[in-house]
Length: 534
Image (tube, rainbow, N blue to C red; front, side, top):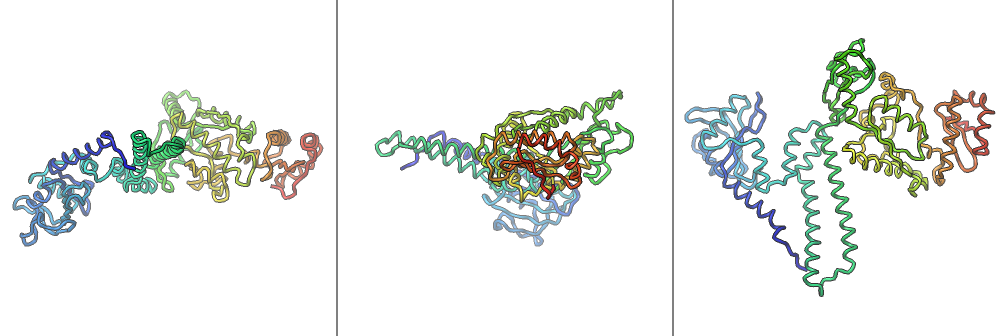
């Protein structure tokens, strides 16, 4: 079967060829390619058809006989840069003939001393002898127009230069090597193939059959869409890595917000006093934390105040809070109080809250309750959150997993990693006790809230989960909480209930024995106490 290409398909290549011709016939440009500052070495780059001829006019070898235009490509030459009879600097000159250079043009790089005045004089001599000053980004522009790199690689050049952390650098280098461009080329090639196949079948139906082809193409199309969506998600991830994560520190006055900023920065960036309302404006500072850039914002303490200046600071703090949103997914696995706490917390700090209803019990992989149930459950929930977040204009998702959670032993963590959900507390090494301490300093009502795993954990693995079981467990644990029990569980194997409490609350079990039986026996029939405790 022969492939058929339309004129429209060839148009981008024709245009690129025209760009190449225009670029090759353009003037030779020159610019300083290193930072203009006092340094050991500075580089002046010359690119274009006349690069070698211009270099000959300013270069002098130690014996005065060598011509750079006669030398081989990719060689280094020692000598001097001169302006007429005046020697400006002692240099090394690197020669690169087209197309084996960054711009795919003849290129000369002059490695001179990096003094601001010295390198400027070298550039002036080069321009004086025929080169034109390069526009910002023009070397990279020529590399793109000459086919040396695609647009994604051209964009990556500046990203590499401006990379502020390890993740940003790795991502930019990968893009510079053509990782994204190659995926797009592969996708485009597949699409062109199918277009050609369809056109060939229409022209020659006797020899090329389309039986079953629509179904095959539909599967291919789904794979292409998935790939494109993945690329879009990776673009959002890349933006986060390069630009950093906006991290707003919110709380009541004198809760320790400025102290936290200073501790994270390792220096006294913010003024700290015992006087409430010391911080009145937003103080911004970027830090690199475990390879991730955090754009920290210390804000005024949120409170009612008569001070006009402080009022403005509080309003700004609330404004930044509204640039984030909280999403709570309500399922049969969460008790009612978790939803109520989420509503209370967001209302207290003026954070927008979106509540999503999700029927996890409609997911067979979840209901079967395998040992890795959390993987399937987290996948369902956070996929739903991602969809809603994108609708709201958000591309960065973060959860509250902390460093006390072992990612290797928790199937749910695998789902978060696959979905690119960030866990800033775990990344920063903040443990559960440390989190509680900091939450208490910030005056959060959740500071000493007992840990509470989802209701599904009360059902033994391998036992099919039913809605009635979850409702029974929630009813029982709500009643026991009212009796004064904290950090406990009501396990629900088939046919009975098993109560687990902390050792210090065993005496409370005996004290409340009759009350417990009155509440739990009608629900479960048999009630047992697990002496292993929690």
